[in-house]
Image 1: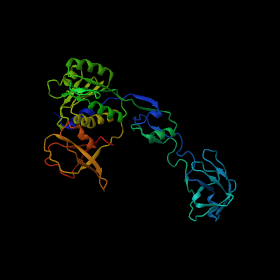
Image 2: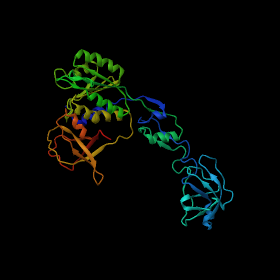
Image 3: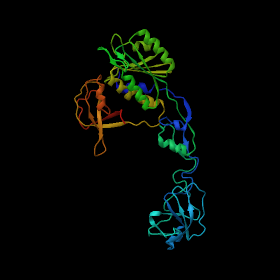
Image 4: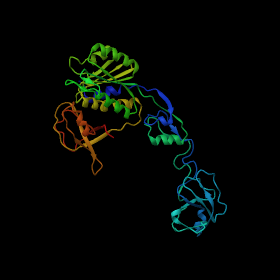
Length: 401
């Protein structure tokens, strides 16, 4: 067996290199950006009015003028007007270009109009030059770097790219993923299990997690029959870059997955990690074309291994520039003195000092997937700890937002 750190090192040393594809901007949400994005103009591209009101020449206000005749209106989206007479003003709308001859906007809340709405009086003695104007180029200059490649596109990035006229964008192509459950005891979810059977669930949990990451997958179920496993896995390997298997990797007489993967040309890089749950985890590669994550079949084991190992591998493979790490404070002492790294299920909350706190949710082993309903993630407790006390800080792997 190897330890968790060594397993992580091996996995992250065997990432795949995604192809770069160009897709329509509106389809780029949650994709990994693979190009730098620059401004095509100043941000904002003109002196932009920030409040509805009137546009004046501040020199007149500074010289004591408080009443201004309304000479017209500067609407948003309309060509720039010019204030001819500095003793007058132009009504000005939010988002419009600042009229020539003006340099200050007085919002309506500070104004009083005559009955005919032809004269505006300013009811404020504390006006400064340049008020309520978003000056051209104060956010970004033309040619400035806006977004670095390696960012996961959110609605914010999408909106900014739209504002610089990007109709299409270069992103990492997702790998083709196959999710495979094994075991004669598993039946489909629409079937009534016999007394010795259970419904499949791991395969649906993994699919859901992949969907959250923006990935699609094909689902397969294979029985514990060596020839069938070999024939099916060989075909799946040809059609997918990534295999995620659940079950068949322990020491039972019908746990054929490690042997079959070897027969199919997938080289074992490790089998078994000093951890609880998920000790029998198997990982291997095939000719730099395929990666196989073979997780133990118990639901908590599969779920934990996916979050602890597959997600970091995917983040690095997709060339994400910044991968966040989380840490949480243990809320209660626990009794665990085994030499294995322990992934403790926890419920989290923020305390009054904004510390992320983790409350242990102790279940009945790696088969108790109902216990996950109460938890938000896993706390990684290093093996060999003599005492695991309240207040200690550990690495945290969330599975809820």
